[in-house]
Structure formats: structure tokens, C-alpha cells
Length: 504
Image 1 (cartoon, rainbow, N blue to C red):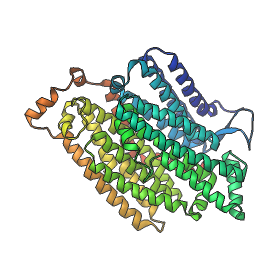
Image 2: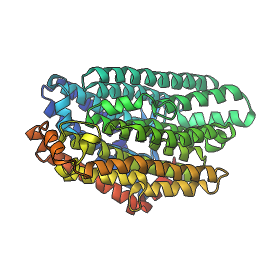
Image 3: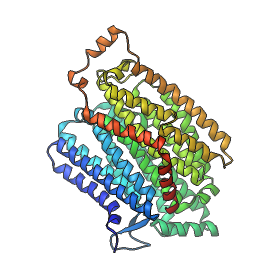
Image 4: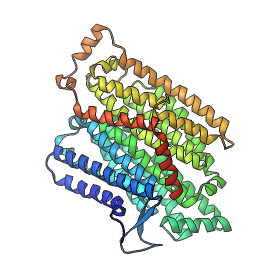
């Protein structure tokens, strides 16, 4: 008989979908918020139990959904890596909602709030499905669900610029989805399968015999390109600053910290479970991924340096951090993939913390977003100032923070390859560029403006905005603890990732 814990991955996806349906029936947004939060935390506990079961047992398992068995039907596969990512995603999603709660209920109209949480629950289900899926078509279905939910979260803050940003986001997302679907259809036409294990056998046979070499290369290129567009791989990132920079705080945190990672995790799964590192390297795909990753690290940081709008600066920073992840994948080694997976966790903690703190610092500064008008804001909310500082130092790569460990392992992963010099130089340059926009931001929030300017600025602040936000404080504390934990107790996390990749 199947152990009860092996039902938890499917149960967590099912709970999120049911919660989305229930939220649509609730009249008050506050009730939908509590239900969504409860489901996210419950899913986190369920997936934490799966993590313990798979890691301690050194195993992975497949859960077949429906009555159709392999090589047809659909299934999810779970190992330590998938359970770790799923649990982390659920916790971060919950903290994004808690940290951005005040802005959320301010920015989203009361009659639309319940529908906002419908989309959050669908987003939760999609992220979990993209992490666990063992069937590429199921992956495509949840890609589209994730796209629709993400666009709704951007559009929830109902104003002109956000509607324009949503249209641009939707256009680019559909382009990525279309390329992925064409590549998937082509792959299915030459292999006859959709389940990943059967696909892997067919792809290996085609690679060995040389049959359908061109269609196989084209299909892999389309799949990688489609997921690259959706995850803001350079140079397909131009939609991201407006979408993430203009959304309400909770949406920005979820979009930047989680949604982009869902597509990357699916791509990583396909590389390891279907195509293999050797085949991707032989076809030259890894070199393309590496090149785009390195360019993203530089140009994302250059874009952030030009910004004075704090949330747009953080959005451009996400482009640079996504570049790090693709750079690790492009190295074409298991060590590179391990570093990329670790950075997924680091960025998933750092960027929601930064967006939540930026939203709070803006609130205590009359809802201004420019760094000039945020001067001294850290003194008006010490927790937000400290949280932003921790997130920024981690992204720069200061020791004892998770971002430092990521960069250290990226550098270490590059040493056995023939790309060491280029990779190390780009990491060093990107680190300097990170400091060149995060340090001025830190100086802005911690240096008080002249008394006259501060008095005029405080005149625009509503008295309620200066009241301590306890939910935000709790969320900031959890995310900050996660950053320090990844920076200090990184060995167990890396062990889980390595075991997960081996069992994948």
C-alpha cells in the first residue's frame, strides 16, 4: 500500500485549486485572504513532510493521476529537490501575502479582492504542479494557468500604466507559451510520448541513432526559448520592469520571487530528466544559455543602476539574478545546476523581502517611490530598513548571507570547465555593479534629508501608515531568517539539492 505521505504533493495542488474555487464564493476579501494563507501554510507543512520522507529515505516516487498508466496518462514525480522547492515556494508565497497585506487591501478594490485570492490560489497550484510534474503536457497546462494568474495579479492594481504593463506581459508570455507548445508538439511527433521517462528513452535513442536530428534540435531550442521568455531571460526581459515595478507589493513579491522560478524549475527538470546535460551540450544549447545568463547578469544590473524608482530598480535586479541562475545551468555540470537551485532559494527569499520592505518604506514616505523621496525612511520603520538592508547585502554577496554562498558555488562550479575565466570575470563585474545600485539605495533610506524636506514629506503621510505593521514585521522576520539560514547553514541545503538532482 502507498504510504500516506506520497499523496501529499497531489493533495497540496488539489487544496490550492479547491481554495481558489471557494474564494470566488466568499463575499469578503479578508476571509479569502485568511483561507489563501491557511492553504499556503498547510501546503508548506505537507511538502516539508514529503521532504523529510524522501531525503531520509534517499528515494523519489511517482504518483500517477487517473486510470491511464505509462507511457500515457499524466503523473507527478517527487524527490528531495522537488519537495524542498515546493515547501520553500509555499512559505515565501505566504510571507509575500503577509508582508504586502496593507498595500494589497489599499490597492485592490474591495469588490475585486476575493478574485485576487482566486488567482493567488491558482498560482500556488501552478507553481506546485510545475515543480512536481512528470508529464510535459501537464506542465504546459499549468504554464498557461500560471500566466493567466500572473497577469491578473499585475492588473489587480487597477490603473492605466498597470493595464499597459499587463498587456505587454501577456503578449510576451503568450509568445513564450506558443514557442513551448510548438516545440512540445514537434517533440511529441518524433517520439510519440509525453511522460518524461518515456520521452527520455526516446530522445536518447534518437540522439544515439542520429534520426530526426534537426527536428530534435529545433524542438529543444523552441522549448528552451519559450521558457526563457517566460522567465525573463535576457534579452527577453523588457516586459518585466513595468509589470513587477507597478504591481501592488504582494504581487511584485510573488511575481519576482516565485513565478519566474516556476518556469526555470520546469526547464531544469526537462534538462535533467529528459534531454540530459550531455545532449544539450553537444547541440550547443548550453553555450547559448550560458551566454544569455552572463549578459543578463551585466545588463540587468546596468538597467537597475539607471533607475531611481525603487521597485523598478528591484525588478531590473531580478533580471540580473535570473542571469545567475541561467549562467549556472549553462555551465552544463551537476555542480552548476546545484548552484542554480541554491540561488533559486536565495532569490526566492531575498526579492520578496526587498519588495515588501520597499512597499513599507514607500508607505511611510507618502507612497513615493523615488529614492530621493525615500531618504530617511528607514528611521520611520526600522524593521523595513533592516529588512531591506539584509536583502540588499545578500544580493551584493556579502559573507554570512545566502547570496554570498550562491556566488561562491557558482565560481566553484566554473572551475572544472573551459569557461572559468569568463564566468569568474562576469561574477566579479556583476557583484561590483550590484553594489553600485544597492549601496546608494541603502544610503538613501538611512540618511535623513534636511529638516524642511522631511517635514514636507511627512505632511503627505497618512497617520495610519506610520502605525507599526505587525504582519509585515512577522513576514520580514521569517524571510530574513531564511536568508541568514541559507548563508550559514548551507551545507544541509546543498546536500538535499545534490541528492534531489541525483534522484531526479
